[in-house]
Length: 425
Image (cartoon, rainbow, N blue to C red; front, side):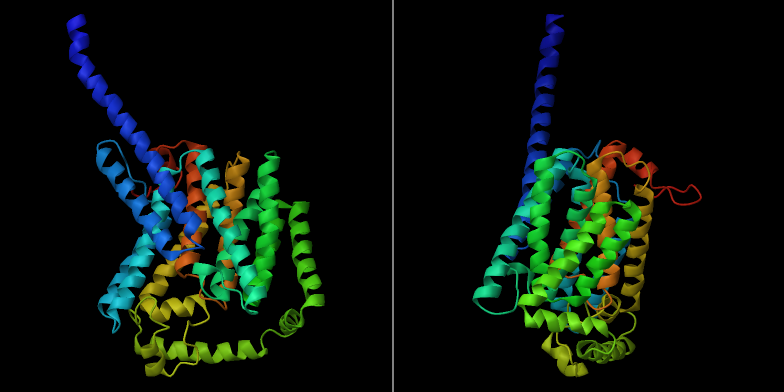
């Protein structure tokens, strides 16, 4: 018996060592995720450093656990990977291949981050850490944006988020998940109070962006969430939103003018200008119908000069922007992503027992509404806004796995397509 124990002890020791390494890797992956999320609105290079750190540790874990680790790729992720493939194919045939390749790599990075969140965030405390990290970064960005607005000039830019429209897109998705959590969490009063304060600050910053299309997207999101929840707090959120804008109008002539244009949105000057931009975008699609000009190349001076564009930034419409940059093939991929996004929302609606999971599900639903309504006049899918969307979706899927058992088999079995066919793991 003693001899047997001696023979087994090296194996036992090595097993304990491997388990310690796995635990350390899990912790390091979480730290990398927190760094990425925290610096997303603050600093591009530190955000990128956090992502590459996360990816390195996650790949190391996959290699170490290759015999028992199963990678679950839900239908939505397959659709995202299809879009990434189209983006790389578009870059190969683009006249601006360097910029287009960087755009495709950004799309790949965001998709990988989504998969990392699904497989690495396996407890509700980890979800809360990610949310707190995200809130910390956004609050600092909010304060920096407010300081710049009132001290330098009446334009709000939030550090690495870029111009006011990009900032508004990110903040709208962030507000969607905050609202979902506020409506769903029952106790956790300190955490809910923090959520409410951050929501108020971020809502104020969103008003300062003067992004009217995003305001309407937020209003549509509040109405839809309110109809689903039938909760007085959703109605209160609508009243607070309208009240904040109304109070702001008494202090700001510019805000009053912006709100006044919503009385006739289709004939307003900026909207008329968008009609011309949309017409020019259709001309580019006719010129490069299959694969477009390359992801994230719309704003290049060469493109502006070649097609005599009025707008040197984007097509001011999510679907047109994707069709211009990745062609009709990319547009099909985008529509596939939206279909499977909606399918995921439907599948996850059943059996939500946890307040946290309900909140993240509502956040995912809210982001879908913001994406579709805001996408009428905004491109929506930029670097930071896409990363924000992947974060919300990653947490929603992670909560789904936690609620239904963390195994890949359980998660995959709940994502059967109509007719009983199961998607590949």
